Length: 82
Image (cartoon, rainbow, N blue to C red; front, side, top):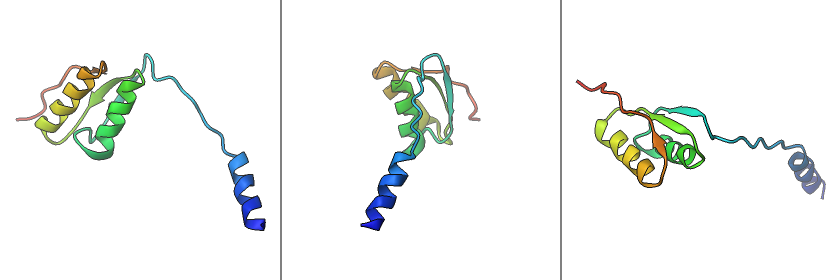
């Protein structure tokens, strides 16, 4: 019973910040796959303009296309590959 009391107490002390991503720019590294890609898609869905970075051109371009298809705003692509 004591253990449940601590869990409830910890839960009651949690502060949740809710912030609008509208009119913000998010710089996402590792946007080509995994957590970075998911973060880029989520932030774009929430209204941020996202700047995408990845080690490979194909994966970052694919992510940018998906964001555009879903109505998001990826930034202009920057040529950084030789």
